[in-house]
Image (cartoon, rainbow over all chains, first blue to last red; front, side, top):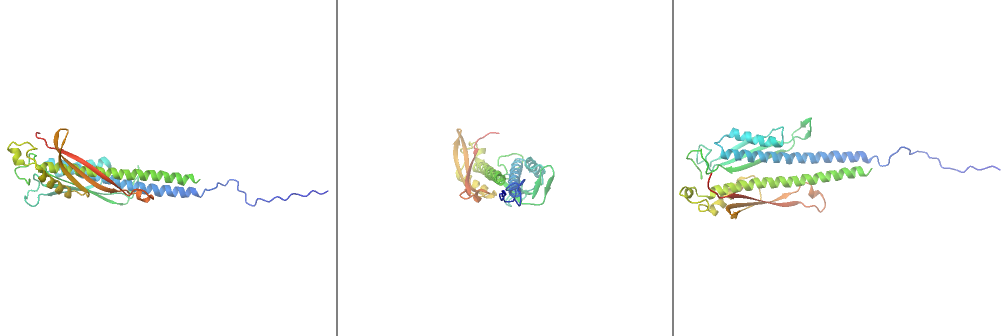
Length: 158
Length: 134
């Protein structure tokens, strides 16, 4: 009597060693890189805005109580900016508006406005550096020169 | 394997929430800076210097109307939008000017989520005391 061999289907393509869904790994990495870059760039803008607004405020506060030392006020603003962004790079400017009434400019009640600007880098990698010019950030702050302060002579806009 | 992009997505969503709240905090911080500048200017210009030199107290020499006008001018000079309210009040038993600045702040990432909030109202109050002395 002859025994018949039972027919068994042959495995034409063995799947040993294959990992299902491996194609999701590059997709996940793509989301990771794109998302991280988006969040990091947004954060850089927020950080820069905090730094410029601090610089503008501190420099104006210094100037309205000083004797018109604009260089000192710029240094104050620069220090406030560097406290947030150590690499520096902000540019500051002042506008002292005495309404055209008094030519000397810096008098009591004159309005002092400071503007600080900074351009964020596109890519910033810790310990390595930053590249490119990204978003331009600007902040300003305005106050009047203290009406009751000493040391400015008799001229006043109050 | 599906957990990898899902996990990364959750990580990015949490980071986006952090950025949105930081943006809100930044707006609050800037508004506080504006409110304190307006309060300082309103207190300074609301007091009649001549009356002070003649011996009046800061409260006696203070004009609410003058302070409001000075405060509004100061608010317009700031690089800010929103509304400002200036009132004369008493705080801790001392006369003070209260300046409240209010503004709508738009979220950055939250509007991208279906049903998520698009903006938040931020209100900040600063005080300037009417005191005499050094």
